[in-house]
Amino acid sequence: MLISGPLAPLRCDELSERLSALLDGERDAAALVRVRLHVSGCPACARLALELLATVEAMHGLSRRGYPRSAGLH
Ligand SMILES: [Zn+2]
Image (cartoon, rainbow, N blue to C red; front, side, top):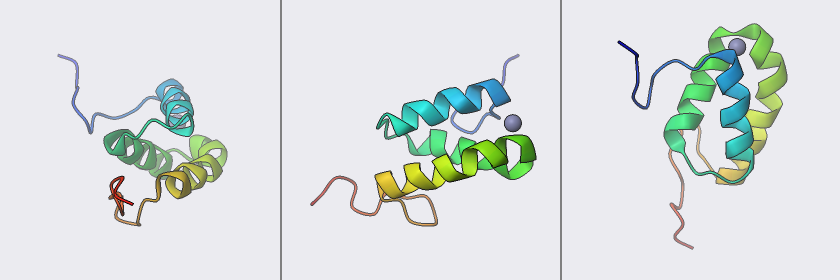
């Protein structure tokens, strides 16, 4: 059985896909959590992804806990 669901582990090749979708403006908090989880356990991806991840988080206005601050209410 495949592990699926919002917190299923990402593979390295999926990580870059998720990241580029997030950089494209996809607002997917679960995907962002999965990206964070992957880079925390994968130094190779962390080197590539940490900077992008910071960009995505800034872009999405996420707090450290990973929740949208204003959820689109401005
Ligand atoms: Zn990786």
